[in-house]
View 1 (cartoon, rainbow, N blue to C red):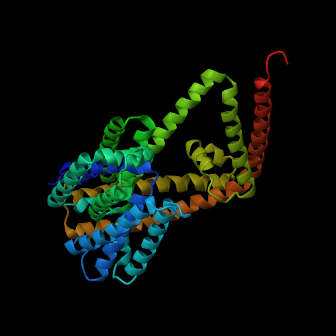
View 2: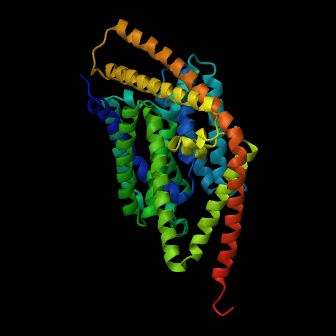
View 3: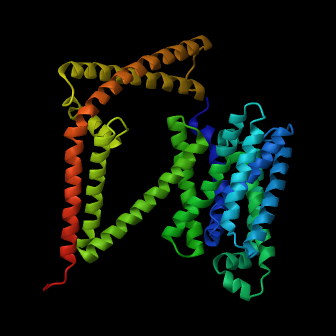
Length: 436
């Protein structure tokens, strides 16, 4: 019997290995202002893998790795030269061009291969669940060697990244050190892409380093904080993937995005509180005007485009069904209640069956193949019936929207515009000096 913990410990180790080296390299990338160099090099490595695939080598083969490494080292040399050569084209533009062209060529090559869409998906988000202990061990050993190299030459690399003027004054051969940095960086990216995919490699490189840059100042503090963030996000992403039966790589990437958004929101709230304490009511007028402007925009969109997705109104109707029922006839209300109950019963049944399938997949429940097929067929038919009931609810929602556009859209528009104008005038009055 395989438990979830036993199934996820190897992917978790792989995530820790990725965190260890990528957070450090991410500090260099942010300091140099070459944010998308990792994405570009990862895409170049993916291009090398697709060429190997076209040549008849599997994606996870040793030959594919050497193809990817050769392509990545060529890209590293190009970036090292473009970073020191004075030209009217900035290095970030070259990085973007390399990424776009590599992605386009990879798609053209994959188009000729059987099951091309599956290969593209694997190159983008990888497949952490299939990683082996040998692969993790090899990756960890390689990254320890690269980490030791960077520790040995940390002074010139850090000075070139953090203070290039000082590095130039000391007579460093910047082009050579840049090639060492990009070359080792490319070796890391090439090794990571085969396991984690392009998007996950980029996330481990940029997001922990970006969050650490927002919260800390020294290199040591940022490095420690970035490692901690990578550790926590790896756990949360893998647990969410296992709990909700979602693709592992994509779930971890999304968790990185949520973590960055949460930190940014917390810092924004802190700045807002400080401004409110310093300026008083004047600091609140901007937030109030923005709130009323959003209200006015919501009313205007409802008035002009009632059939578009109004998520705020969907949420309001879900929380208080009377908001929608008030705009339906008595017959429509009865149909609405019956359809909603049917949808809820169908969704509960679908969740129960999917949980049963997941238990069979994880090995915690025994079920014959014949019974599994019956469950699959019943699940398909139950999903179709539930989809029909949801379609009926969608039609009733459309009927309600046509009536809400005037009874809700116009008041929201007037209240939003009036409130924003009133607060704008009040803010100007509060800013007037005393005695005027």
